[in-house]
Image (cartoon, rainbow, N blue to C red; front, side, top):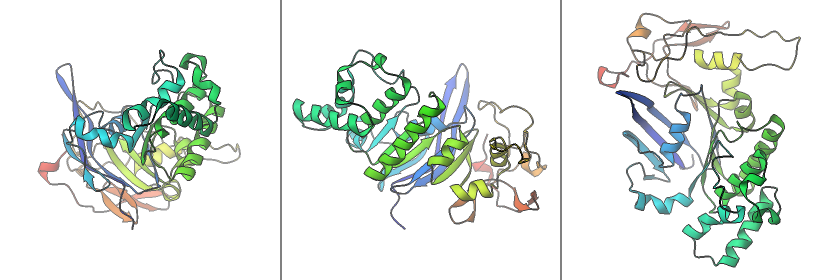
Length: 336
């Protein structure tokens, strides 16, 4: 197997809100191979975007490790991290807020070249024009300001800016959630084409399962700051193992009125990350909860190559979940 481009180990971070501490990311672990697209899905507030910002060093983790090309980067200073900025780029969710309204598009796209290269002004402008063409815009658009573009065009500009320094990893944080459906398809097709053309690696963050299904090779499902299941795309959609994954997939509509689909409705609301449940984080909403689930924390278990799940109640038999005995975390690893 090829060396992992990115590996995250037991990543954890907390934020102080008023007088309470909120655990935004809780012992998250995953890896991404070169040229792979890993989708990260979950409800709003589950820690997806925070995970992306931790990897991009926009936030410093409280504990855990981030390995990029065999180098641990989570504790690097801003000065030490600066050379790696060209290898890890981010496409942000809001195409209206992620671009400086006072800068022309050609200056926005060319700014990374000014920081990370020794190109002359003419060379930078030529590169910017090439990138504008790559994302389906005209070189003449470089003279305009962000407010003169539509949301889809602004997101293309954000993608061009990320491509400027030829990154190895792009973290796409809900890049199409603010766009119309038809524009979403255009941007997703563009991202897929760029991935093939430049052999890019994506961490694709989204709450839309249909979008993630279209673009991802593997998918990680997050719940309350923890990844509860990871699996190859086809396996996850064909045979989801975690009850939360099953509930998410049951909510995806099927465009066929004759097909009957069982809808799994979760009880209750998402618990507060400032006061998460003891034991299994999902037990307050799980239809298969037992007494052990309320006190013991399950560890991730590999149930198939590339497929991991963190739960006690697992196996699929006649469309029902039966109990398997899985290892439990020790007291010191318990999630509070």
